[in-house]
Image 1 (cartoon, helix red, strand yellow):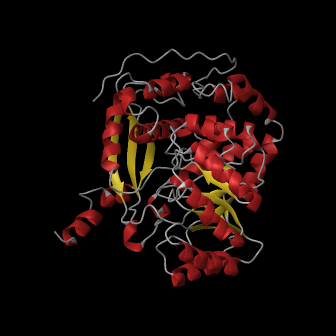
Image 2: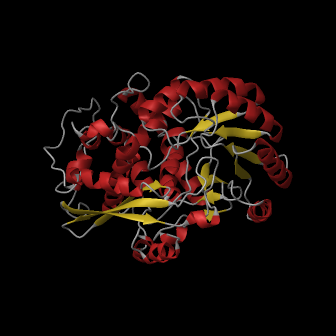
Image 3: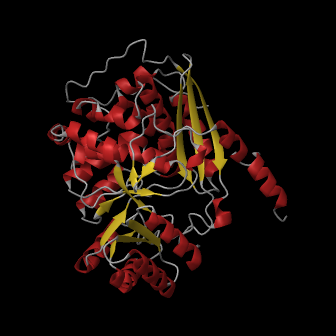
Amino acid sequence: MVGCGPLFSGVSHAVSGADWTFTENNMPQKIVKLTVKDVRFPTSLGQHGSDAMHTDPDYSVAYVVIETDGGMKGYGLTFTVGRGTEVVVCAVKALSGFVVGKTLEEIVGDFSGYYRLLTSDGQMRWIGPEKGVIQLATAAVLNAVWDLWARAEGKPLWKLLVDMSPEQLVSCIDFRYITDALTEQEALDLLRKAQTGKTEREEQMLKEGYPAYTTSCAWLGYSDQQLTQLCTDALASGWSRFKVKVGAELEDDERRCRLIRQMIGPDKTLMIDANQRWDVGEAISWVTSLAPFRPLWIEEPTSPDDILGHATISKALAPLGIGVASGEQCHNRVMFKQFLQASALQFVQIDSCRLGSVNENLAVLLMAHKFQVPVCPHAGGVGLCELVQHLILFDYISVSADLNNRMCEYVDHLHEHFTSPVVIRSAHYLPPKDPGYSCEMLESSVETHQFPGGEVWANLLAKAPE
């Protein structure tokens, strides 16, 4: 276990009014234990989640539980697609020394400082910094901390955020490297402006929910028959926004997009997602061929790190009325800053586990609002819908106050493994009511799907050819 020095105190806030008040009733004691488990689901057997780049994903999580000496627990996770989860587990263990021994009051009392502490260790930073496996692990740990905090306050995470003052929210953000795009004062001004009408927007979300789109109908590995049936079922359930995986073969993409567009009609929304499959020129040519099916966006058309490539694609596709969306594999707030500065994205797709948990997502939500680019989060996977619903509810209520061209991804896989699964009604996310960040899994699911010794995997591996 890695040792931990004093709480980093190098970040000072120019804002006032960010003080926290804790009582013995709502503040758990010291964090005394962190456990992490490799939990995998064999989704590749049914081609669920398959796309042009990830042809055989086994949806998985590095699942974190933190415990206090007061008996409270916080739950967090980070999403993977199978092999490599064990590497994330090792990274979580390496970070555990920064968590065990702290009180929640110490952490959230200077949350931006704690975030920087977790991401700035003089040696472990070398294997990041703030990207890759180490950032996935950071997200898992901090997701558990935020879950613990929300539970301590007796609120769902979205409500904890909505009830914070602008000063308190800003005190959670590390502004290092992004002040050329968003300063603390600008963030405060945006949040203060959004205070108007906040109560009405919260009531609206509680009544109507947040609009969602579905990716479940058109995974790349699905047959036309399966796609047709799932699309028919989705239409009957009130879905009006559909995403199709593309990028393997152009003729196949044209056939599948034509089939979906014919089924959903001209007025419903279609998006396409290539999962990083193409070079820049290839992306422009391929999407131009699919333009007759009127996609709202092309998602991840090229390398997720190629900011200027995305800008080139965006400029080329603008006359066709097709935007570019990306973000599920965008490493950190700095890359999002550059995407926005370069006008390389028309839709920002935050992810609850790729970025450094809520803290870094707050920064991206505020930058997106300043640049007037709609946020349409990435979800699906294992637990991503459960997590990101909190962030997008907060964004609408406390930041953007806008639903134009905004929607949150939904995939109907694996929610039965959570104690507080998402609730979808009429293709809308209904706000969670249970305290926490909605990522606590059923103990039985964790045990049977733990890799490699859980019952599900022990049986599968026993049947596998040598």
